[in-house]
Image (cartoon, rainbow, N blue to C red; front, side, top):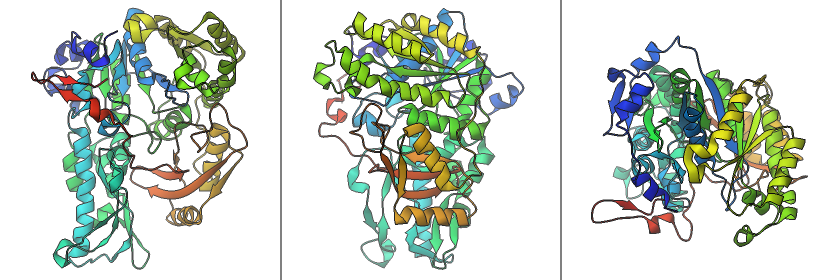
Length: 555
């Protein structure tokens, strides 16, 4: 089979104005970035404000494994299948980060014959949104240090500056830095550090903002530091929100692209789910609901991370209610959860599958807690045996969920038509969507509800610093915000080595911080970091450009 980039390069893309026309987008609402991608103007929101919303479908997954699950690929495949069964659909995705593109996974635009295109553009600079977010973030950092340099009228304590610089690249050397060295002219020496752009509060704000005025207000609400007297200092105190908004005025507009089969897709925003809230922008999702009968979106990593945050943060803030959840898994990944080494996953192993099934069953249980119908999508591999499929089928019947064996990676939309039929049917089932905790509960109670109900933890331990931070956040009157958990994606616990469905474990909360502009409280667990590092052999080593300018190695 051809590589992903070879398949994408051979795709027959339609000019982006034709994709826009298929959605009823007017010419004046389209802002092209070349032939195959465009932004949608603010005027489209006003024109479609009174149009009835379509059905919202969330695609999530089990905990990721080296075997692969294919959540984005399934999202795209389902979107390609919908027109084949006579349904008008649009996809709403996150933008890839350069960190994983050059780090672990390479390209992040789906796979096989279920990809969004232009794949090379999407995985690299795209329409510049990531760069704009990085610039806006670092402008605020520059203004903080300049304020201190120019007399520090606000009395900012350099030891209590909370806001970090960012970079859209995995660079562990920047996690902890010292700035301002070299004498008085170079600023005040202090400890600092970088986050990856997709973990920044500015990214979260862009993804949760309702419109440009809301974006500016949220930026102004960023808690940046404390004074020597212990008083909070916000971005608005530095008068930075206006200039930051200027840098983001185009980035807030969703990006229109297409799949290999020309299904429309909106790709906008890209926070990681293990260290941020893991969902594409509210603006893109809400617009997609106006443009088609079905909006298919995804949330990052497993349901314990992205889907929980989609339900408890994004849907709550934006007034959204999903009609169905698609939960993605593979038999290979379940066998890995059952203790099989990656090299041996192609061999039949029914017992290992049975041992790994509790991971899938826990994710089904989690999604049902939100009151939404669940459909399980199994990405089928040629090595899956009849005996393994029979065990899986029996387990899904016991759990009371529909499931579909999918082949969209190899066949595109044709391979996901059964899934599409079952998802459409699920959307017609009764739904009682609700978050799993109330906002007015104490911060610790909300954290413990997530840990107990979603992760299956027996208890939660807090560091002294975390306890103090919760006390400070509550004193600021911000204790009523939702919780954004930062946790390893590889396990239901905060220990990535605990596979399948661990029990009796404790979640360790090391750090708690307020993202007042985004409107949530970030809770860091285990050894999770907001600036990832590169692996021993980065994907960057395989990426190249030939003499004709064709990018190679993005897979």
